[in-house]
Figure 1 (cartoon, rainbow, N blue to C red):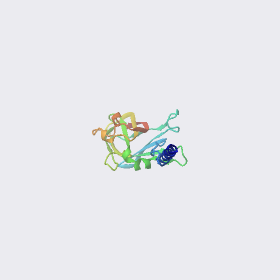
Figure 2 (figure 1 turned 120 degrees about the horizontal axis):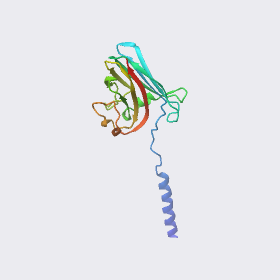
Figure 3 (figure 1 turned 90 degrees about the vertical axis):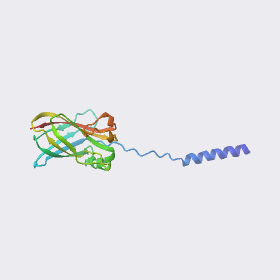
Figure 4 (figure 1 turned 45 degrees about the horizontal axis):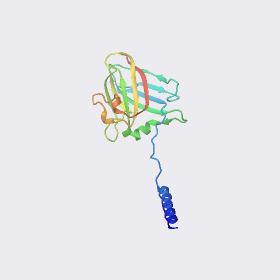
Length: 191
């Protein structure tokens, strides 16, 4: 009888301990669908000179090709640029830009472009740790006309911002790691 009581007590203790055990999964920050990337360049000396590049991929990572609006910038001009990220699969469209701003420590936009396109590039926004975010930036275009070149925007989630190359912080390097939330390539020329 004592063996049965002991066995029953051990069994009951095991049930209570497993019932008290926390099985709550850690919250996962899922990637948002980003269907649209808009980059608007505004000439600092002529507000009427505004160029908006737009990349729209209706099915995200699906088989349909994105619809791209490219553009040309003026030679020797300085432009303030603003990036807008949207999920237009929802109605009304969801502005993902706000989420990226709120989670700036784990996001960064990187930029790739050919030589001669920009004489300078400068991030205009930072996260709370003083590291670049990239939703706002300033560029000065080259002094001479340049045929259209690729201009790529890459949003990285949870990359190692300390691995940025200090001479070109806007260029994504595989050493940074992280997950690509969206990558959009435009064709930009200088006139």
